Length: 361
Image (cartoon, rainbow, N blue to C red; front, side):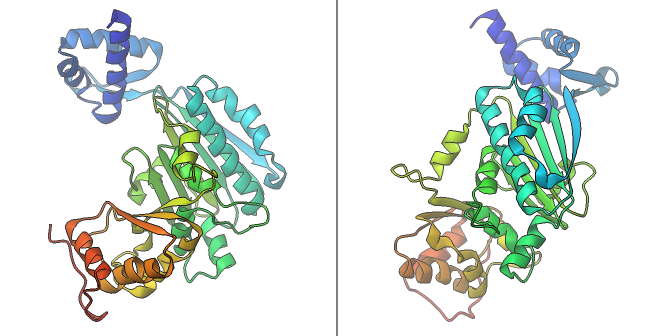
């Protein structure tokens, strides 16, 4: 490995450690590369001179943090007249033009899709846009002062509560204006970015690709400063070193022969209300809505410790029996959930009032 290449690896490691362990940067990088802390310190000083990181405090109490190289806020009036491609070309692109091409494509896709949602759906008079960058990642925030995405979906589809809108959004192929939109924008944008969040009406819809799972709501709420009660705020964040491409994201959820969007990923944590568990047929039926529009549905049980027999039976026996062309794939399950699914598939059922299986781990 050439010296310059090794130096880049060391400095990349320093930037990673600044994010994760801002008080232990030198010792952790020194141990990783088996070099002295003095050698690491030279690389740290180089990054400080370049403006990538900054330090506060002295000696052992010193803390490093990434420096924002871009932090720009834009305000657009008459949101209904905005052209999303113009916003991208004239406002955002000049701030991110030097990121890797795959990251640039993802930023373009997300920005134009979310701005278009404001124009066509929000009923907002204004649009606010914020672009932030540091040495590792780019964040884009799109905010409006309209009706609120979850409230609008609740009204359009007659849901009992706006929270029901979140699980429908997670499936994709979902829009309040089918004549003009495919309902795929939020789904594919959320899959493309490392971190994606929607804040509206006190609710937070989140997704992260960083661990291929769903975030705690508080993490995204804290990531968006000065959030407002009215309207909708969308946060999109991506690392500059990601190898993900927008084409790969489309391919992962599309039929290879037709390119049709026919696979989806549904996080069941969005269906669980606070203090509630997934135990009933009515809960399962709400989740199953529009599954028949897909060939494969990935049900993600991350964060779910137990399910009831009636809930499992409605999905894994009744729905599967009535929709043989739709494959239901359970992921991130635990042993007890696997046993309950196997039980209903085999027909070993008690009555629907039997107690749910709980995680004993």
